[in-house]
Length: 155
Length: 155
DNA sequence: GCATTTTTGACAGCCTGTTGTCAATACCTT
DNA sequence: AAGGTATTGACAACAGGCTGTCAAAAATGC
Image 1 (spheres, protein in one colour):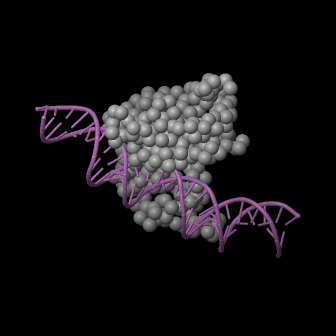
Image 2 (cartoon, helix red, strand yellow):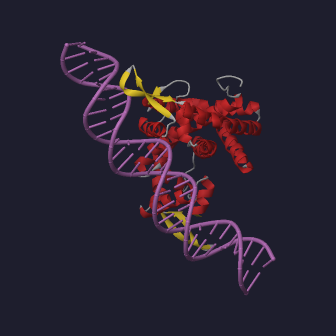
Image 3 (cartoon, chains in turn brown, purple, yellow, red):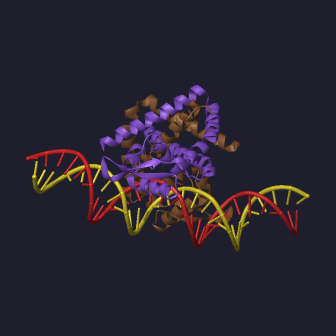
């Protein structure tokens, strides 16, 4: 044996530090989203699902794929959104079972109510980092998502 | 009114894109951690808590602060770790109620069992991004954590 | 030194994600 | 056209985060 204490490799530390940062960021962004969404009567998850079908109606499984979640979680949120009158199921010409989730006026209004505070928060964050750096950080996040995806494919 | 469609500001889009990337990353890292921890009989959360007290025993509330979680969530995991024989509560000379969570041999062994696979995964991710870029991405994550923290303070 | 405030653990309940299973529907290959 | 495969929704169970509340212990301020 080489010693009592296993020395972590630099890569191992880098992965661990990145993972811890991501878990923290998840908590921070979630808290921010929750805070922004609450006044409009939404939760972060509801807002996110509404946002996904804002441009165009999608079936539950399609939303799940787009957001990288399981269809079951999205299904539960979608049912709630419909129940609370923020969205509606619409018949899907291409699939009898997979109805389309569509934002209806109340849902659109809720999302619009959030916008001003969202803009303000965005402004504050960008100011905190600087315009250029903020874009670089976003690019880094997206690059990491892509890299992790390629890793998963290999498995 | 200026138009039927509210145009999002560039900052707003940047924030939204970053948030979506973070939520995705959270899922990806969580899945990876779960996959690495399972063979050792741990979950991602258990592994994370064990990792926090590996260098030095801490009370539950201290672990929570260090990880940016609530003490209640950590408490539940800590109780499970003790129940399953991975950790133990030790009297805290500085506080009668706040016992210290300490890793015991079985917990140390579990963490050590994970290390080889963790090293391999770290190697693959770093190779995917390149050594230099991987460090830059980690730095960006940590910078964003700090920026979000400053934002929260302002509220 | 004592009263007030803060921290901490314990308990309960909720939200959102996961997996697993089943039947119905769509898709694909032959 | 038919049969096997993949996708989808429904339902159930579970994991891990959150908040809220209470009492005990510690820290603080006068």
